[in-house]
Length: 267
Image 1 (cartoon, rainbow, N blue to C red):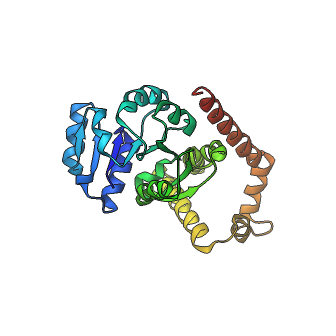
Image 2: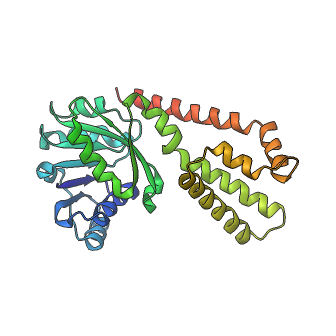
Image 3: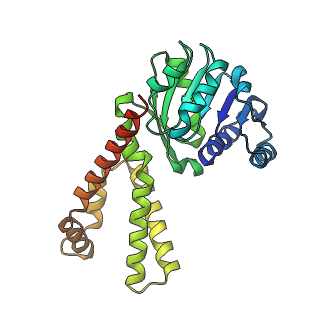
């Protein structure tokens, strides 16, 4: 399978490096990048072909669009003359619907929409994929195989992508916000910042691993830490009094609504 990646920013390079680590032959990988210095950097680092002309993707089986949502229309207009039915186009741009991509490309081109997240940088990403009108099982399997080296992949109906964006797409930022807050609390309580950071980061990593490996519901794991009348119970009481749970729900609703608004602008 020949893969062309249009867009060599952070997520584009993450996808590229994942394919290489996953055993993909660099000779079958193509990157479209117009900045000469960046192109040279990627060619040297991954031994792949890097070109400036979008027309080169005509020979690729799969084309990954890893560009900013606001740039997608222009990229698709430039891409359209060089793709045909039989090729697969995978869009990793937030808020861009399969319908929008299909409307800019020749009829019959298969499109898959993906919502990735930044932990893909360390091969712990969570990506959700949704098929367009012309997709079949083979197309979805190709998209999943392309994303698998960077983490986990789940299939969802496209109507759920706004919720996915709010949960896993934006999710790392919520967790980083909590980590920031816990570190600041540690400093406030008298710990050196470096010590507070190590304590919080390892606690987050360990807790996530505990969740994954035990398969226990988070409520069960939380209750195991929360002794009646103890320190954790006192802290949880404050979080509940400050309606932290409700704030998270409201925040994710806001993220979902913003994703819907972004999608509406591409119609």
